[in-house]
Image (cartoon, rainbow, N blue to C red; front, side, top):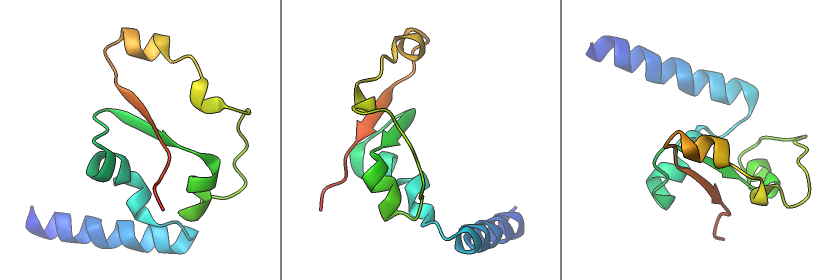
Length: 82
């Protein structure tokens, strides 16, 4: 199991390096903002992690997430601090 985990971590790092995205984007919501299930970032913050060419409706952080919330999911919109 340790070998599998070490290999997986290495492959994940290689993948994110190859696509030019900071892999911390996958954890920042939980680690720094306490997101429990899902989180989303502003387009500007996605750019900071190397995720480019994202288009979103103006004020998409106000999107009605009721269908997900009804299923007991917690979704957090995060705007990174500088």
